[in-house]
Length: 215
Image (cartoon, rainbow, N blue to C red):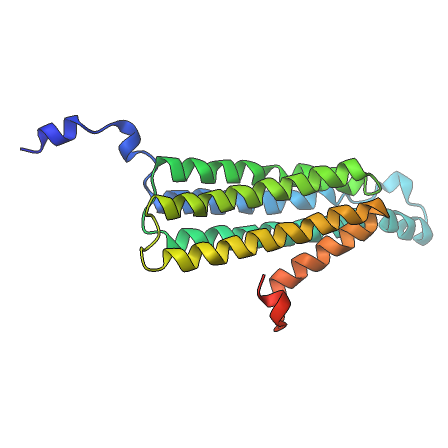
C-alpha cells in the first residue's frame, strides 16, 4: 500500500537528513583546522641560532605567528560553538540545510591558510582583508543556515522566532565589529589585529557588561 508514495519520492528528499553525521563531520573538520593552525609556529632553525641572543631574536620574529595562532584558535572555537548551538536546536536536517553547512565548513578549512598569510604579512592590508573575508564568509554561511532552518521549519515552531533573533543579533553584531577592525588598518594593521583579538576574547569571556553581552 505504501508503494505509490515511495515511488513519488526522490533521492534529494532523503539525502543529508542525518544531523548526527553532520555534527560529527563538523567536529572532525574543526579539530583538524585547529590543529593545522599550530603548523604556522615553526621552530627556529638550528643553523640560525648560535647564542641565547640569537634564539631570543628568532622567538621575537615568531611573535606575529603566535598572535595570529591565538586569534584564529579563538575564532574557530567561537564558530564551532555557534554551529553546535544551531545544530543542537534544529529538530531535523535536509539536503539543502546540510549543503549550507558544508559550505560553512569549506570556509572553516580556509582559516589555516588565511592565518598563515596574515602571520607572514602582518603589515599587509591585503592579507588582513583576506583574513576578514574568511570570517565574513563563515558568519554569512552560519546565518544562512539559521535563516533556512527557520523558513523550512527545522527549528521547533515555538522557539524559532527567538532563535533567529539571537542568531541574527550575534552575527550582525560580530560582523559589524569585524568591519571596524578592518577599517582600523587604515592607520595600522596591527591595530586591526589587536582589535579582532579583543573581539574574540569578548565572545569567549562574555563579560557581564550589558552592551557587550547583548551582541
